[in-house]
Length: 415
Ligand SMILES: *Cc1c(COP(=O)(O)O)cnc(C)c1O
Figure (tube, rainbow, N blue to C red):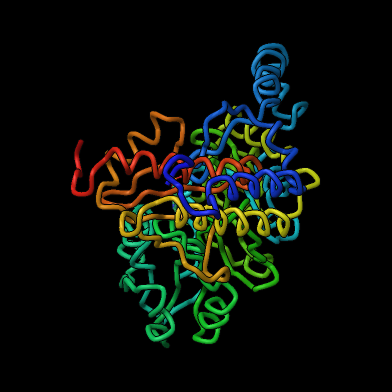
């Protein structure tokens, strides 16, 4: 478990440490870490709140002091405030495999789930009265989909992702699914499920909160209809940074927003009494954008310049494999059980470990600088953000986990 108790000739700790250093030295993304404000701990919670890129505060300072402080209202034009939602949407687009003009940034993920689900059932048309929702979803998606169903006269059908195929039918209007499960880190088959939803004549809505910025999504390639995602996880946009909404170009003309605020009007400054929707992704807007958060996000997206999502994915899989290998080598059998899918095709960019003593274990990990999070009651969740987590971090996290488990006896679920 640690160097001094190892009596075999293989000395797993030394071997794994050495391998970590070699893997870091060969990592094409290793240089990105310096772009982030990090301390010498191991930050494994970038899937909840991405780290701050170091150049961002100065850019936000400029937004406040010059754009707002000096230019004041002129900034809506001169600093590009008014068009920021579409401009930043186009920056996110390549990260999720979308051509320009289909993503708009604004509002929270929850609000965008509402827009997308209502718009989806309207696209599906009459005669289909069911909305299928991932029963294991992040709760907000389920709450919002239920409210959308109630408002539109549809019935919610909660289904485990594995049962979606069997539940699809002529009554299905829309299907809301998570690309990666926030708890287990399971990656769902977006191409296959989208094709099946289409074969049933229904509309596919994907939540990309835990996949965008961690792995390729391929929205256009796989014919996704609508998608939403947040920007404060793997995209490092900052606390509460605005979410985004993707509406495939072929649906834009029939995208009928349930929140048709003046920002989505064809002539917002005409201030007319009647509503006429704008063309294109603008139609997904609602009210005045939260400019400070939005421009914080825009600055943060610079860290993606020159990064290929395939390289991010390759590193993510190597990192999670390596972490699992270190856990296996260091942690006594039976104390933790990985719920991360073993198959790469089913794994997101996080490792969830079931542990009866999860609560005291995570508290002690955080005290020692290994920051993951707890998903009650018994899941230790570790997010691996390939832009700033390295292999030595993964090895250290597993080693400290083993040390902490040695201090927290099995069965101690509170202390
Ligand atoms: C993080 C997350 C959200 C967050 O929703 P907000 O409205 O931004 O608070 C929603 N859905 C999923 C699947 C998430 O992982």
